[in-house]
Length: 257
Image (cartoon, rainbow, N blue to C red; front, side, top):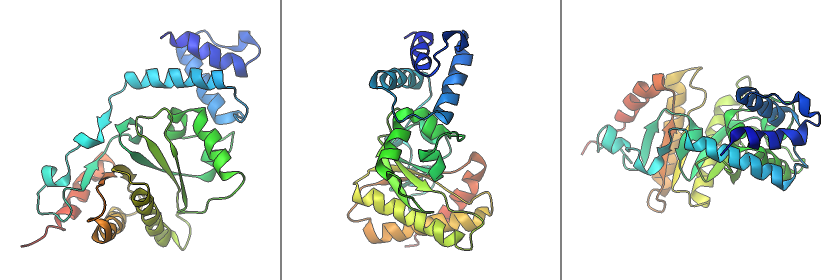
């Protein structure tokens, strides 16, 4: 595939003055990113969306991707007698680079539906169809902190994206909103029969011990209730520097027989 030609096709829809379209590939990619961030995408025609799909899927071919099914669970990477060790894994890579049933996308409402905002990697790499779909689903309605919606992933390797409005760290209800976020995510996983889900640990930059405990308590409370009726791998997504403390806290959940 000639990326220059495909990007020219996309850019020419938005930039009517062809002389304003740069010649270099890197400059074209940069301009495409700015368009996704700033332009009203509600009326983009099908052929332009298909051209963007072609470009993004080609880019996937050049990325290192992870298969959720092949990730070692904590029974394999740590010890087998951790409670629910066959249903939990820990992973530290980019959530846009994994083959899984679903990834969790903590985000703002503006990032999902507004234009002229600095969109994140999930929105950018999914493509213009994602923001259009979120606007259509919400249709002017508001999602509050910890509430979610689920969409297709479009041009990411996962199947679905669970978008969750990130709790406001300044709110007096911050901790409760985080707990509700995890509960809503896991209920969504159960209700949609999702077999593998990647969930980032949030709040960890504030207090690692505290917010890792909140996440693990939420996951274990869920598995205590539903482990007999679901077949789901819960993949905890943390930064590389937080893996050791996450593993230590998981080891604290060893079942003594």
